[in-house]
Image (tube, rainbow, N blue to C red; front, top):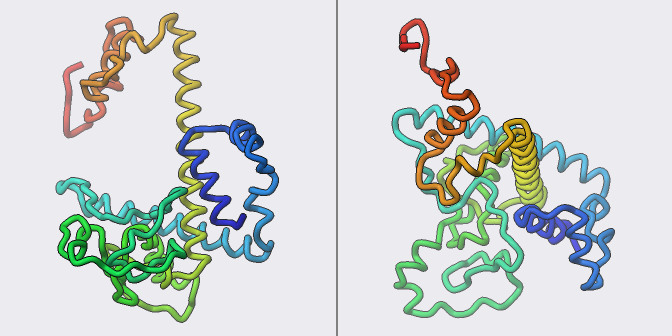
Length: 261
């Protein structure tokens, strides 16, 4: 098992919200030793140090890019219509769509001849993109995440690189170095771990709040959410404050905008 396979297994564990112990118990019946899927022992120490540096740079560039995008979309909405996301990490079992894809980076099978019906298919045309580097047709699975464009333009991987590529474009995995692809996977795992920790902390906070209040918040939140989060929050606050109003319910109050209290 190589680094990418081990990380994909870790991604599936986080997506299924399984603990490391639950994952190990699930792998043992299949004869898989959990010690063999440790990504830390699958690479050289020098490469790990460099990968961590590139991954940290990617996280900073991604945060800056997100803030710029949010600031630029003020008053215009935050609709993201990009087919390829920031990481574009494939799951277990994802393969190249074949047909019109000329890169085929995620399969070892021979490329089939493109069928005439596939060329004229509307669904196929939507899933086929153009690499900004080699100009070849590439499917979504064989594309690197848009974060690869940030790394390529930053010169962190190759100091001789000095290109200006729009972030709305895509780059195929064959035009990216291994360390860039590995950094995207590592940063994606970091985000999944952060989301899982936040979910666990939220659940623990709700459980502690249930014990303090004396009744479960589920009695005040409908099972099938048909109202907005704002309305649910108001109902919970009304119960916690015993019908009293809190100044925290007026976040827009200021010297320029007065509210009745």
